[in-house]
Image (tube, rainbow, N blue to C red):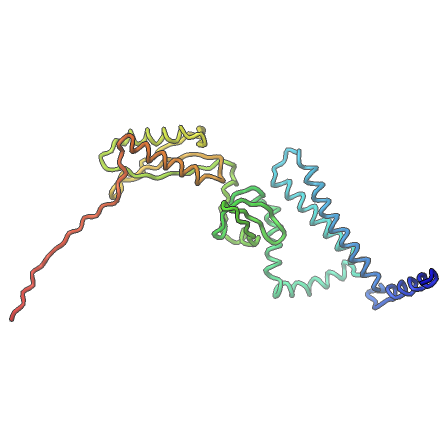
Length: 291
């Protein structure tokens, strides 16, 4: 193919994609217009990720809570995408005034077909603003317990203690009861309950429980562990060892270590852990039959 033919073919192709297809508010739209808009929007989406990375790097060494840093970086990405969407729509001739009328129509559609998506997206914005949870928190919601890994636009990624990743809809964090173990800090109090036989030396029981807690390096010494005599049970004297931990992720392992050591120390000191006992009374009756 000669050079003149290539140039002529390029002109024809340009004329075809530049040919107006229809008109909106005085703007003539062509295939070239739509291609430009798509390219422009893709550039803004890519730029939004760059903005988020830049903000995370910029805020990395700042004395700000990590959750606030993540929220600011995420908002920077969202704002960039919104600006890109507005500019893209202006490129194809859709003004903001037109969007207002279109928004009323879209709200009806959202109310019927996209209600769940809109609810989760708005809930995600509320989470980023109010920050009831943040990345790194250990939470319990809807029967799911684990660490918050990523708060996305529609859902939140949670990693359980069994290393299973679960996507939880953001609306659940707004509409349901949420337990955030990290909300007030990285220290939390747990308890281990144990019963001893009636007649046991309660002072020795208390000393033994405190000794087990103080000898465990993972138990915080301030606040100090304490022991409560909680009840006179049916078969036992009930005690509760209360300890403070700053390792919220593996607390079940630490409490298991305490139970193992309590059992061993009780055996060494002849402190009995009773089992429930029931007395069964059998009443016999004589029934006479007349022949």
